[in-house]
Length: 294
Image 1 (tube, one colour):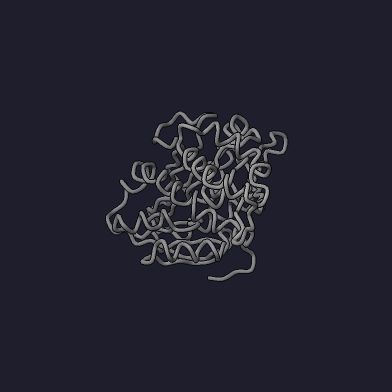
Image 2 (spheres, rainbow, N blue to C red):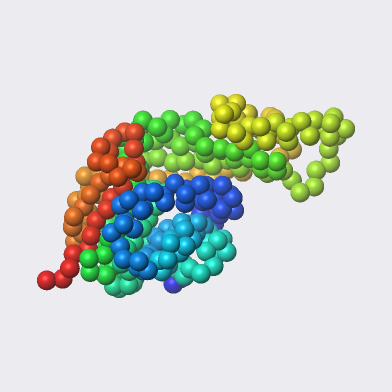
């Protein structure tokens, strides 16, 4: 499936996402998927991984024996996904526009992908498409960041980041309570392919590489964050680029009402551990069902 109206801006994130966040986020989703979705499905069920990114979760589902189709709006993300999950099927398109009918036993959208849908009207379009794509009695699971959580944690400070031998990155989220919108800025530093180092730089190089290896440990998160905040001064010759992605913090009640208006039933709202106490400390997982036809 091809469509002109898709999220091509995420192509620029594909390389870094595949190197870093993709594998980590995929692992983080394994437990909540098992608790809330997979335990309720038959073996070898057909699944749609909506907004699949670089396909790490798709591969995990394939390894469990499910038949999985990955769907994403970024062509470059899908290029990586095809390599990460070679036995999966993949479709390129916009989550607001796709048309599939009665094909899947379950649909999953993970890692707060639906926060990138910036209006409730467009989110409803996604829900309608998912509803249509599900078989009767099919299940839909997605997680999403919500305003109470975003207000508490999205403070304009570095929340994620790594320093490797030839590249470094950091992620800074921010949230505007009045507008109920936010964004996250990803800053990438890359060592140029050809660098003419001074003698002083060549002497310092091994020590810097050793420092970066030490700082990769979670024991030194604080030091790593401090270095990332001033990385342009530390590595003056490295190329710096930024990517800014806008998101919306949809209210939980409006999401629930929109799901109901589309036709979903048995709507549950859980934490990542499958508990009911969703608050400012947790993102929200929605599980709902397309009913059997009467």
